Image (cartoon, rainbow, N blue to C red; front, side):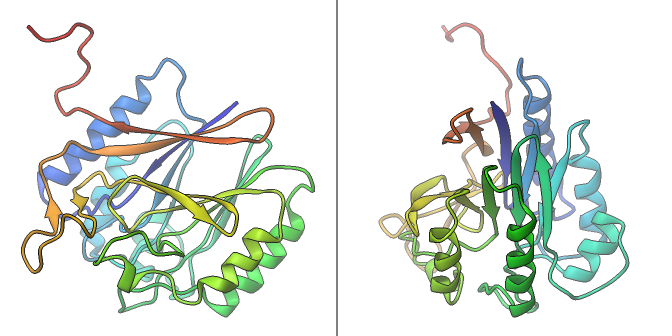
Amino acid sequence: MILAAQLSDTHFDLTPRNTERVERVMAYLADLPRRPDVILVTGDITDSGKPEQYAEARLALQADIPVYLLPGNHDDRVAFRTDLLGEPASTAPINSVHRVGPLTVIMLDSSIPGESSGLLAEETYDWLRATLADAPPDGPILLALHHPPKPVASPIVDVIALADPGRLAAVVAGDHRILGVLTGHAHSPIATMFAGKPMISCPSTACVLGGSWEVTLPHKVMDYAPDPAIALHVIDETHTLTTHFRTVAMGGWLAEPPA
């Protein structure tokens, strides 16, 4: 069994609140009797792409297991590379591939610099084709990106989702090794189907974005009351994907019911 934890939309903004929420999540994962094999963070690491926010994120997301990150629409590719990844400055898409036992995790940069909506660039598709060709022929694969490639019943997210999703759908449907697609951006735990495979949108550690039945524009959009939440993806020996969602209580673990 492989256990992959997913965090998303941490929105580090130089205020204690969002940092404390991520620190609590990381402590929860570290204290699990069976800890995750990997932690995936699917975009909007920072609130506005400032170097100081990435420095804050780097400290809070430290762990003794691998942590892999991709950018979202609130991130800045140059600062993401230099201040979070410690790489040379570049505005090219930040794509990466990681092996976790038999599992291949392919993380795709769907951000468009200066825009809120998403798109996978031509160079990303070229890279994706080469990466899939190099992956083990019978090993399971998860794709991760920030922007959902299909509507999720959110009046906010659906207008700034992934453009040209049919192109990605052809890749997903055409490769039997791809178990599912993981996204962020929606600030809500969502399970649906895309190109015949599960599409899981991870909740945000920072806040909840309402669905079409909850949002009243322009004011009632985000709910900052709920505790931070994450997704936990289990890939079993039959290469089946099962996802659990967890709210991580800021007050910690209660072994007995309250009086």
